[in-house]
Length: 554
Image 1 (cartoon, rainbow, N blue to C red):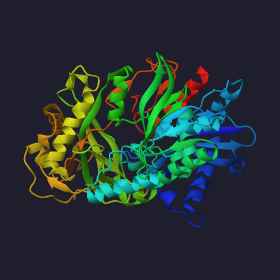
Image 2: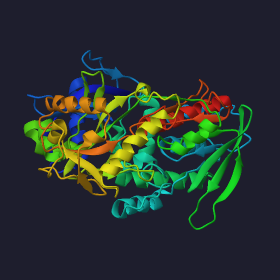
Image 3: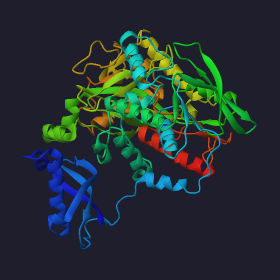
Image 4: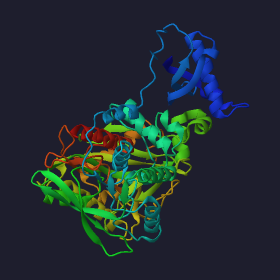
């Protein structure tokens, strides 16, 4: 029988002594012995040990260790141990659950269309393909190989491709990030597990299945995305890049098709209509022109809260020392570069928090519109960069952009991005400032021990000129507050880079309990752009769950 046992502790020091085995074999041998002791059975009866979860215990004044939840097949019977939570059934995989929909399924007459090929669109397309359908995918940006060249050209030469960049293209905005797979979704052990196992299936490292803060890294994620695309095409799906949806074709309140324009650089732009009765709208949080199109076609949307702020950079070794204490060297080897996640309620009522923290990473230009500068963070899988960086954000609500227009949040973002572009010298350099100078309200004269990593170069400036007053006040209070939680976070030499505006979608495209848009039957808003997710894992999971609802519609 299968058992799941929680709260198994192994000292970090013992894990590092691998002897003749590989570190993975040594770790499993230690866990096998520990499980035998916990269950009071010979270790020979403990078989097929699998790590389900693993997280470091970073509490101060304790020896560094890791806490595990472990699955294992146990031969024979065991006695219940009150101190250990034992689950007598191994976790069902989500793909077994989704396959149940195939029974008595009424096949759709027209091929479903997926608009956008970020995490939500990718998983919509994958699950639909695995169920035997042949979807059509349209993506305004390029395939990941071409898109990478466009992004690097922007970073190196300042030449922005407004259709294929960090925001648009195969894989979505998360492709050029740390590849984090954290999520607060409630059914993390079902659909979330399915998403993680799918990433592993297509080339992600197996450790993402059990690490408490899994990440893939931008370098590996690009290959995973390409592998998924090639797989679904081999199963009959069609994927069209450099192709933008320009109109929904409708008959009153029912979808009949989508109008698209192909903008292949080697061909004259070509317009055509794809007939369909099911379209999954996975457009991402930066598809501002598509939001305008939906508004013009009276698709019901609403303004929603999001966050804006800056990127903050520290030396990674300082974050390692603060988080791992005296065991920084050992824990860095066992657990990688240290991260953090912090939040604070400012006296003016604003929430201040860190977001998309990138250990050993870089701050990069993430613009999608000319004359509007945007920052983002990125790490490779090894997280070997000199600096740590994180978004440092403050919440804003529709009250901050009180215009009645549903796209007022978009214009709010644009105003900040335009100020950042101007303050950086209008050459795509980012305005940077030492944290200590930002708090004092003066322009930095030179950088200190932390050198900015911004991809397009930087210019020293006063970020108070960009940020709304309430946001700046909250940041000035939050930085010292975080310094009390992580030693050195509020160092004078920490570098701030502006501005970060694309934390999440500024609108929500309303849908009902069936997954359909409340305005149009057959249109399924999905993922981060639709306002129902925040990050790679939750967007992918939302794609899977909306496909479930679509199947029920059939």
